[in-house]
Length: 167
Image: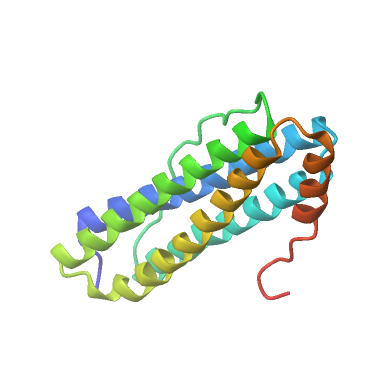
């Protein structure tokens, strides 16, 4: 059964949003590389890959429903930051926007009777709780570290030890 047009448009917008987040995280990784913070750069690269996978989950759902995927344009992401804290605060704001968008999709799916989307969206709702908590923890750690370069380097090493999903 095909998706109704409102739901299809919203899902296509979500695919673009997830790919945009991936693009943004890659730009953040580049900034960390330029600051010689390879652990944070690696963390952001993993986050970029994860966001791309999220976009593909929505992509596959649309395709599985027999619909056409319509990708939107990706704007150039912010690539210059004043500090590691600013990068992670930007990341947290981005995650909160994605969470709001997924919550809106869930509301729309219920309103439009698109119940087949509910399991997918429920998974994403849980995932976003983890995403926000993870980034928020780094923001708090960076705030506590302040201008202490030794603590910044320790956090860089810690973030560089992140394992990917399934590892």
